[in-house]
Amino acid sequence: FAPAALIGCGVLTGAGAVLNSAEVRHGDTVVVMGAGGVGMNAVSGARLAGAGRIIVTDIEDGKLERARAFGATDVVNSRTHDPVEAVRELTGGGADH
Image 1 (cartoon, helix red, strand yellow):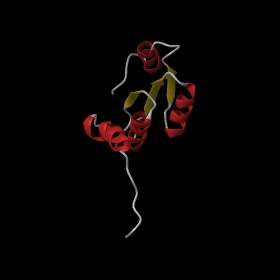
Image 2 (spheres, helix red, strand yellow):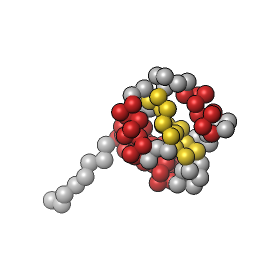
Image 3 (cartoon, rainbow, N blue to C red):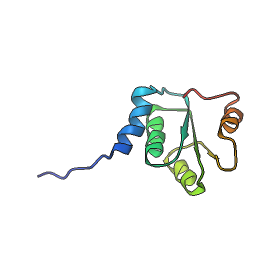
Image 4 (cartoon, one colour):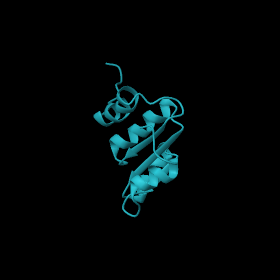
């Protein structure tokens, strides 16, 4: 049989939520809470949709570094910063999604 690729549920859940449920559009600002498997794929989905700003929050700096590699424009360590206040400050009031 031909080679196959496994697409785990984290890919479909994260990217699908951004592209199908939230309907992120070009230039939108997106906040992703959590930089695990689903969150990272939400970042990828937001990039594919053309989001202008992608803000990721997590409590682990290593995950936040990986989020930047996936396409996050801004990261917030929610262990040391209030994520709601940080997003308000970064965006001048709030995000689209």
